[in-house]
Image 1: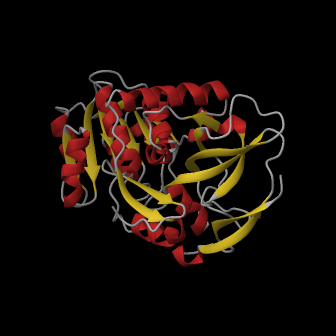
Image 2 (image 1 turned 90 degrees about the vertical axis):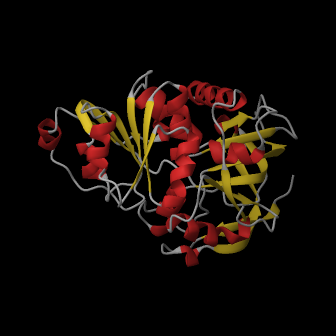
Length: 335
């Protein structure tokens, strides 16, 4: 098998969305243990923006993107369990998904059930598996648990909300605009609060009848960190898993004691799917909820792969609802 050309989005310097360039690259044949995929849908996430902006410094040049779905077009030596034409999806700790074709170690792939579309998979692998580990393993949400979710109408937030509701939790959501209030309600929030309008801490106090939240899932970061801590009951858990407004401030451990012996964690998906059996079990649980219609994947925006810069601008400006996907070889636009 010879090397072949493929198109990709590349950045050679850190900066705003303008650094994303459309380039033609050479793709070698898959190596031992690798599978070559032709992408059909690529997920867009805030971590891609962190990589591009330099928040998470990376070796340059780099192709952004952590999750995608596609079809197997070639197998490297030693690959077992996959075949040509098979539909698969993945999420990786390393970037490289914003391209038409790529090679990837087979151990990171999961097979897609017939009931899961490529766009659903591309919108689920990072965000859905994040919801899985946050709700089932970082803090084990049980029926009746009082849960507070930031950015409840966003890509991860909407999946967290639905999954928490399916687990029997009492779900409070926070959104950033009035347009997203109804979205969060439809996803299953029992109460939806509007940042900048509602007094978040007092609203949580009223909803929980003074008990406060058992766990707060905060993907916003700097702007909401202290407020999130104040929404927790004694021995509650603060889960900081994103930096949409910038990194959270440093905190002295004594602050956790003053607020009632709180727990604070900054987890990463890739520590929870490091083992093949963990990845497969998490994906099975996620796909089962989708098939049972307890987890609905809302792709709110579609862009052509070549329009990745516009997708980043819209995500940064909070103009998106639900998940965003890039479609290779397409003139796709905002849905």
